[in-house]
Length: 324
Image 1 (cartoon, one colour):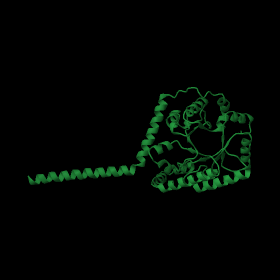
Image 2: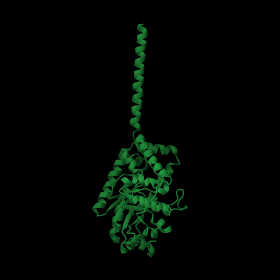
Image 3: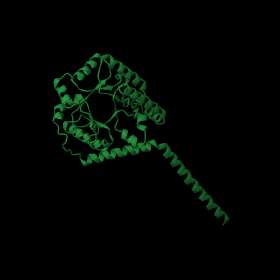
Image 4: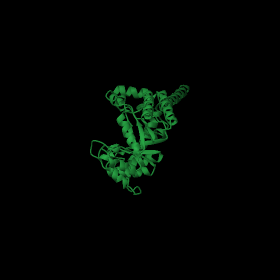
């Protein structure tokens, strides 16, 4: 795909940079990066683990992430590669969650254990913070790709989703909030309208998939994709697209070259309402779940005080009856 002249010309015309997935460090992948370097297209090193190791970085594989970054730096130096940035994709271990979902009680026990294990997240934040600082010392711009529940976490000062799912809330030089409306069509661009104002960078998608575009959880069609791009551009100059393969397959690149970014788009009021309700529901659920222990103490203490008051009133009444 990246050897196709039409694709290269479109990327140059769009002044785009390409995040190259790096689940391995092969000569073939190095050749792809050399090709982008030669064409003047900025390349981002999208760091990943091998598929058998879970692919994404998370709270439980920080040592593997550190080894991966060290191997990446050595490979970059030996191959003479040039990067505009390094991307850290810290996402849940979907294979682990899928396995746990088949055993309900094990899943519940795991989530409960993680809920109270704050030290696990502290270690993970320290580890990934150190890795980011090391990359910066090497002269790299660091991008992070963040899950859409991160703003809700921050607003209620909770790390519960991170504890459950193994994601780590750390900052790079450029932080991209992944707002893929293809997975929530009922709220559509209302999600970007709701979460976009607080985002440094916004990633839209997904443009690729095996099902028909524009329906269900299938990839975005052109109308949806161009809408999301325009809405996102109102909140950030840094817009990511997941992914290039889908854009090429659906013929989006030539249309992006001639797209009018100043055109207006209409977001149905129902989408805006649904996105707002989703955001509020997540925040309330997170606040309650994060404070359930304290709420339980308050409830128990209140019940104890009421019972104590009622018993004291009952004894006082019995005492008055006895005197009379």
